[in-house]
Amino acid sequence: MSYIAFGLTANIDLIGNVNEQFYDEIKVSDKTEPPSIINTWEEFCTAVCWNMKNGTGAEYIVTDESILNSLERRLEWKLGIGGTGLQAASAASFAGYNTIVNIPIMSNEIRKLVTYDDEKLFLTFDKQGSIPKHYILEYSSLGRSNRLIFRKLNEFTPDIIASSFVQKLREKDVKVNWLLVSGFNSFDTSTDIDTFLKNTIAFLESLGEDKPNIHMELASIWSLEEQWKIIKTLRSYVDSVGLNEDEFRELLGIKEDLLSLTDEDLLSKIEVGYRLIDISNLILHTKQFSLVMSLGNNVLNWDQALCNGNKLAFSRATKGRICNLQDIKKITTGSRSNERGQRLRSLTENRKDIIINPSFVGETVSTIGLGDTFTAGLLAEAPLIKSRNWVK
Image (cartoon, rainbow, N blue to C red):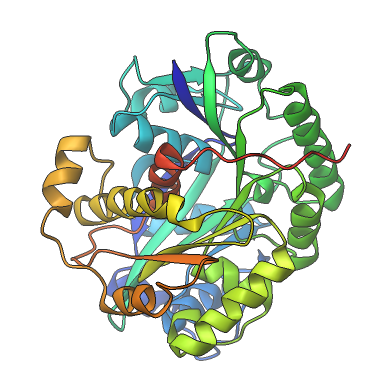
C-alpha cells in the first residue's frame, strides 16, 4: 500500500479572533517591525498591530508566560490540532489519502481533536503526556486576512522523531512516496537546532536506498542565520522545499509585500530565491497562486499536484475546517481562479523551468492551517522524482 508520511511536529492550537474591543485594548502608535522573540506585553501589542497594518502572518516566541496567560483571559478560544505534520496528515487522510504521521507526544487532546479515517491515518508515537499549546490569532484588516502564532519557550527537546514512526516507514509492505520533514522552528537555541538536524539526517539515512522523495517545509523562525543553516545542511537530502509568501520575503530580506511587486519584479525575486536556496524543486504557495520552479525536472509533472494543493487549501479556507473529497469537489467545481495567478501562468507558459497554478477566489472563513493543507494536497499528487545522491 502507498502512503505519504508526515512529520515531524504536533501540538494543540488555541484559536482566537482579533475583535474590535481587543484591538482597541492593545492598539499602539509605534508600528515598527517587532523582533521574533517577545519579552514584554508592549512588544506583543506591537507585533499584532504591525502585522495587521501590513497584512502579514508570523510566528513569535514568548519568553514570559504571563503574557500568554493574559492573552488567554482576554479572548474566547476554540481548540484545534496544530503542527505542520499533524495538520497536513489530517487534511490528506480526510481527502482519502493513506498517511502516516509522527507524533512527538501523544495526548488525550489530540485523540479527541484529530479528524481522521482509521484506515487512512496511521498515528505513530513513543511518548504520552502534556503537549505544547500555540495561541493563534486570526485577523481581518484592510480587506486582508491572516494569522499570527505565539508560543512559549522550550516546547520540545530535539528527540521528537518517534522510533515507531521510523519502524513503520521501514516495513516491507509500506511504500512511502513522499515524506514531509518540518518543525525546525520548534527549537529555541542553535544547539538544539544542530542536534535536531543531526537526528533528522540520521533518520533519513536510516531509510536506505529505497527512501521516499523528501519534501521540506520551512516556517517563520527566530533567526535568519539559523534558517539558512537549516537549508544548507539539508539541501542535499531533500528533493523539494516549500514556503509561503511571508516566509519567502523574510528569507530573502525583501522589504515590500511580495505580492505587491510587479509581475516582472516578482518573477525576478523568485528566480533569485531559487538560486540562493539551491534545492531542486522550489514550491511557493501564496494567496494568489502556487508555483514550482525547477531546472532539473519537468515542471509540467507538478501541475496536478499544485492544483490539488490549491483545491484542498481553498476548501478549508471557505469552510473553516478540513474537507473530505466530496466537499472539495463541490466547493471547487465552478469556482473562479485568481486573475493575477492566471496572468502569471500565461506569462510563463512557454518556460520550462517554472509552472504557476492560480489560486481559487472566494470568501475566506479561516486562515488556519491553509499552508499545511496545501502541502497535504501537493504531496498527495506530487510526481515521483529521482532523488539526488546524498552527501554523507
